[in-house]
Image: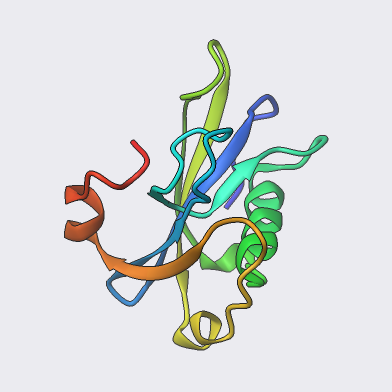
Length: 128
């Protein structure tokens, strides 16, 4: 899945394992946006990464999962929430149960869990 954008600040991905979303609990530090809240994997772009390269690197750093482009189901470019006049990329992908079971949690965040879509969308402890 090729995304046509060369100027973006970062990516987030909704990774489904079955009918649940893989979420990460952010660190509880006052120095970061939205501390101690649940979010989707992803982060800032490095160098001239493509959207897939950016999100694949972030997912590996955060969760130890090697994504391949064939896991992607959908993508869209949106205005950045953090940087005026910039763009971010939102992707949706599918994880296998084996990938979920092989997670090696990195050093960013407090933990991870699978959440139902209703729980994620209805929580006041999720990054907006």
